[in-house]
Figure: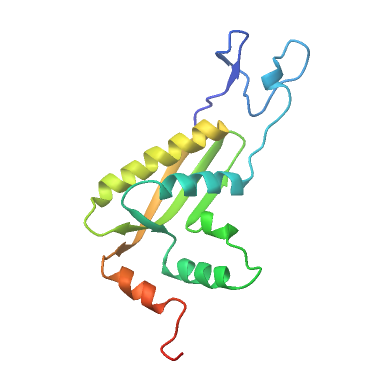
Length: 164
């Protein structure tokens, strides 16, 4: 692991030796570096999940079982849909670094290599820009390919039964 520790100097540029996440104390430290900032795993997971979902060619995040449990949770009153943002996302967050694991379903016909490359780029960019953490890896498991005719089956199964 490399240490990419930086702080903001008087000119607003990174200064080697002090982390903006870890902080420094004393009168000679700039306001941006006084104190420590920590990121909860859930914060990083939400950022990664939202960034991944915005990539064209991604149909869903999460494997089949996770999507089924998520759909059931969303139907239960008070079950809350908050977990759906982080569905299919697992993160490990340290003091200065983060690792992200994603489970995705891609659209049929897209280049999986290109889509997963775009997901990595977008997730790394969003997490590093918003948190200041270095993303050391983004592992992606493609769990399924969404076919166009599956859309009709999903819509007909949801909500209404055969008998009214």
